Length: 257
Image (spheres, one colour):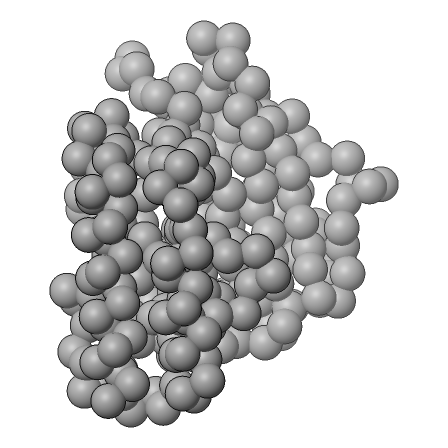
């Protein structure tokens, strides 16, 4: 059996969950967003501890039952066992948030090495926020696990960029991951296409200001620690953090013109 690190174990779980989940649920009702979207479809090197998905058109009770059914399926459990996930500690549904806006499933993955890894799958019901496309998860993500192709719905690159700029401008607590995710997108975006999204000047201005509010220490603790050891060697310096921030600042400056 291959040996996978903690970041990979969580990613394996998320990918296999999606594979089994979309066999039961219609793809058109969902869209993967956030870090998982960046990682699975836009070549981000940042792993995600949790997975966030937008949902519309599925009742709270149906979604809850469907998620729990997948997690308890013998075939699903057999699938993840081959990757070293011995069992799943299911969420306490008497305490889990299950509302008309958010459905949250907090889980523990117990590995064959005795590790107890926390992860979360969260479904948001605040409406879709952009263009959704259905594509195959990148081979560079699937190949290390020798997984077959996986097709899933997610926000396209321009919707993702708009979401990240909005998050950078509006979060009560600024997150280094929003800056890093935009950095990942900078070389993949056609600026003229992104300008067509007509992001408000006030949002661009606030996002630009917030880029320089995050210290290297916060970037190191909240982003670098979620990179592979090889990528940590590249990004674990204040100089590289400056380069990341300047690249994102230049993107926003171009949008402000």
